[in-house]
Image (cartoon, rainbow, N blue to C red):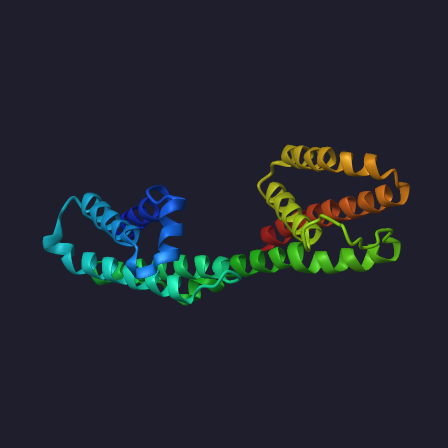
Length: 239
């Protein structure tokens, strides 16, 4: 694990700390002809050497594999990504890098993970409740409040697509985490923050039905998250 963390530290420094947006744009425009691509790989090589304390007698194979694989993955991303798929390829690129670092770490260290460790009753319970808090609650709340929806989609509506759904999911996940970690006071701050941001919209709209609609949705969202958090802790204590 220590070796993997060393590889990961070098990767984070090289990909996020010592790589500017100008370099990224230059690589996207010129691809393999970009000098910034090779500077980027050189920085990764130097950081690896530094973190490994220049000990290539033992780790020379891992060093070469990491540098070569990093170059190949980056080049593949540059040629395969499109404007619409840049976000997808960013995450795919990082996942491939992390998997590569993990696999190379196993060459030098006996690091095995049993898949059974991922199917313990506590982990499965947590996974089930996360789905209940995020996806299931979103559908239930939508079904409940649809009958009162006072909003009509406007042509000049500047709201982000599906923003309300994602905001709701995030707020319920935050509330759920606050409940199971016994930080109830943080729920008040979250509710207050949402109220402040919504206050301007509700004041400018001067629509009582819209205010009531948003209030019902917010209370249902927080209520579901709090209830599921308490239920999770209760069931967890029974295991």
